[in-house]
Image 1: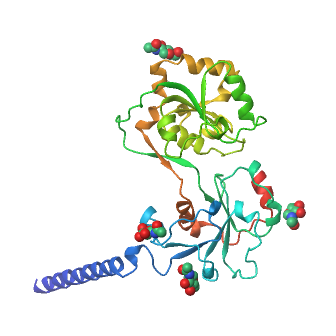
Image 2 (image 1 turned 180 degrees about the vertical axis):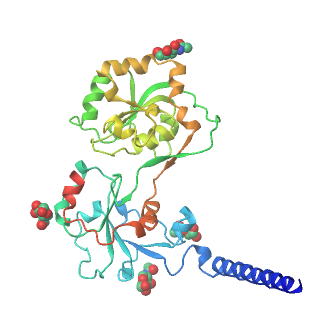
Image 3 (image 1 turned 30 degrees about the horizontal axis):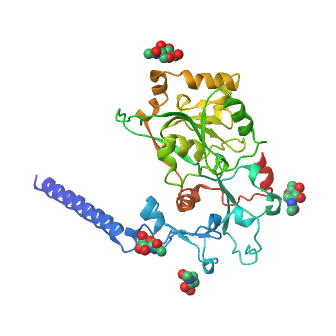
Amino acid sequence: MILVQIYCFKAILSILFVTIVCIFILFITQYVPGNDKGNDAASLLILIWYWPFHKTLNLTSNVCYDLYGIKNCQLTDNRSMLVQADVVVFHHKELQKSSDVPYEMRPPGQKWVWASLESPSNVMDLEKWNHTFNWVLSYRQDSDIFVPYGKLVLHSPSNSFTIPPKTGLVSWVISNYKSIHERALLYKKLFQHVTVDIYGKAAKKELCPKCLLPVVSKYKFYLAFENSIHRDYITEKMWYNSFEACAVPVVLGPPRTNYEQFVPPDSFIHVEDFESPEKLARFLRTMNTSQYKEFFKWRRKYSLKLFQDWRERFCSICTVYHSLPQEKIYHNLQEWFKA
Ligand SMILES: *[C@@H]1O[C@H](CO)[C@@H](O)[C@H](O)[C@H]1NC(C)=O
Ligand SMILES: *[C@@H]1O[C@H](CO)[C@@H](O)[C@H](O)[C@H]1NC(C)=O
Ligand SMILES: *[C@@H]1O[C@H](CO)[C@@H](O)[C@H](O)[C@H]1NC(C)=O
Ligand SMILES: *[C@@H]1O[C@H](CO)[C@@H](O)[C@H](O)[C@H]1NC(C)=O
């Protein structure tokens, strides 16, 4: 009897000991200096070789963690850090005219990322970059680092959303009007049958960045016409100008099935759904309130997440880094992108 008690006592003691050790280890890993900043020895260093469109952003704080909760990820734009960098990212627009690509300095194993959010119609000179880049960062779903213009995230069901008051029917903001664009051809036919209020440089009614939402949200519909038609090329024209503004997007772009990979089928109107611009115009003009409300049903389940800051896109390299093929190289980037 006494023997059993002693064994029990020993067992309890050892359990206690293990528990204390566990708590201690947990404590250490939580509070070692540096860890609270989201960095440790496994931290990745991402060097931004060119700021997109020469717009420098503030990197002084620990941006990836502080702004996006992404741990072990440091961004720098200090080119002296080239040798230490795990990844160097090159934005295509500046790369196109560059003569300062550091081929000779590239350490073995360093990953080079080609970054662009433009469509193939607006990306030139890709042939120059055979055998150079390991990974691609773009809006295309099959990119190594997939960075859409926006996405929907599930939230707990709620009915708290209300449609803002509407005083106009259709609006369109356009800065680059080229009459040969498919969107211009469609628009010309459409506007014979429905009034479209046009803003932007092309209409000499430019809206400041902060003015766009309040103006566009007064309209029931927004013409989210892409400048060129390519798989997955669904831009801020739908995500920001329409969804963020609570205007229903009338989309011109890739086929409906492609849009439905990103958003619910009843969240947008596709120009393809109509035999003619005239029928589309009539649909917009004659829609009643209950029918209109149906286009907002998705908001009970989803909220909108926009991606607008290049720092967030660059930080997201770290979240997929370890799952990407380390030996990959694009021998023919042109072929991949134009496919
Ligand atoms: C950059 O961000 C840090 C931390 O958020 C801030 O203290 C600093 O003033 C900013 N610098 C500039 C030039 O905006
Ligand atoms: C860039 O990095 C180098 C090398 O680490 C360092 O000496 C230099 O002060 C840095 N420059 C800036 C502007 O931070
Ligand atoms: C890149 O590769 C493609 C396909 O092999 C080839 O046609 C093209 O000439 C190459 N470009 C350069 C600059 O070598
Ligand atoms: C609104 O329009 C839809 C589709 O045309 C129709 O089925 C519905 O009965 C209409 N509702 C009202 C209240 O007029």
